Length: 287
Image 1 (tube, helix red, strand yellow):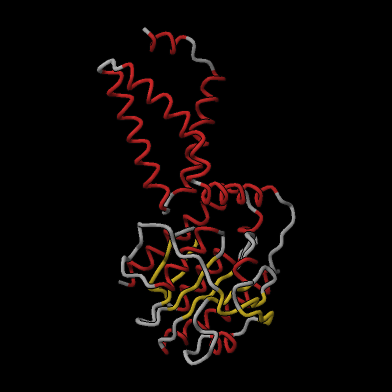
Image 2 (cartoon, rainbow, N blue to C red):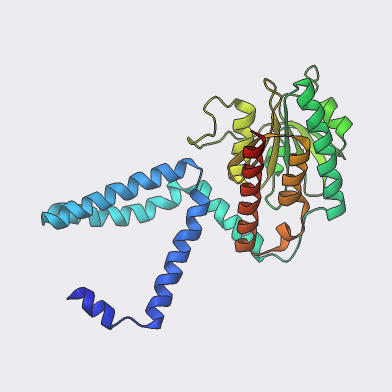
């Protein structure tokens, strides 16, 4: 009877309301994917649904009362538990609403991409580990301060010198700021909080690359010291086993295109997804 009453009273406003609520949850899911929070969220949902089903089927009043109060408590605890993810979501919403583009000009970004690709190719051949971070809209000032200030032009020669194993600056990250300049070297990055790693044997350098992409919208290029393989991380995901040509293509999609800086969030999400799918197809063909 309740179902029939709901169908009889279903209006276009109610349908719009349901659609918008579903859209909010769908959009929120993208901020939690690939992080440790998704496992915790699944566990909480499974626990609450199980308690609700058991209390309703068996008509357990005390358990139902406990479940209802747990929902209120969880409403207060969620902002604390998911603070990093909520912070990142609010930052993205803020960037979507701004009219100012803090990024370097497209021509300068193209130069940065070329220099990084050249350096990554040589570093890969020499088996020299590297960690290069490209700042976009999210501020990386707190991580820049942990390293040695450089404030220099980005060149492949400078990157090769920084990541030479016998220099004092090779153990850390080189960060390229919003103006397309190398702001620092030997910077310390946060390690990933995700348990769903593409490879459980990933070293500290790759975990740091994933970590900085989880807490910001930065792009990170990694060169493995053990294998010489080139990888790139963005939005908590990693694309591995790249050569210099594919690295240029992916960097151009994520960093070099003005549409990525000024488009709306849905368009950016679709473009990033298409770039990742194209990279995966390319990688399968190469395998």
